[in-house]
Image (tube, rainbow, N blue to C red; front, side, top):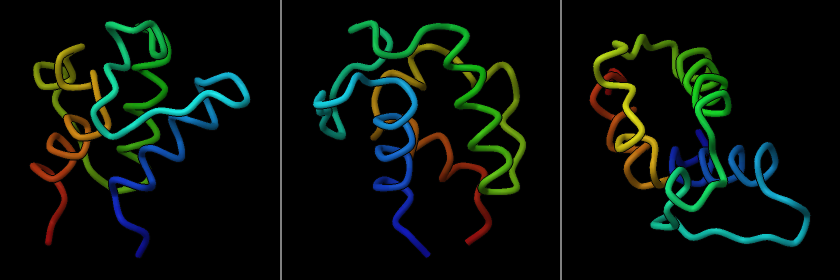
Length: 81
């Protein structure tokens, strides 16, 4: 299976960045304006569907979605290993 970190980065890049824009795993996504509240909801739905998990609303915070690394940390809390 594709690495979660690479998968999340690829999704964010294809869905929310302009062509030619690049991010790292630590790039601030929300505080830099790449991901807004609407995009965060669609990203949450993508993660839940892709990994067959349910992330509680209390955990789906802007802070938890502010970088690829933070998103991966969140997903890893709910993915069955």
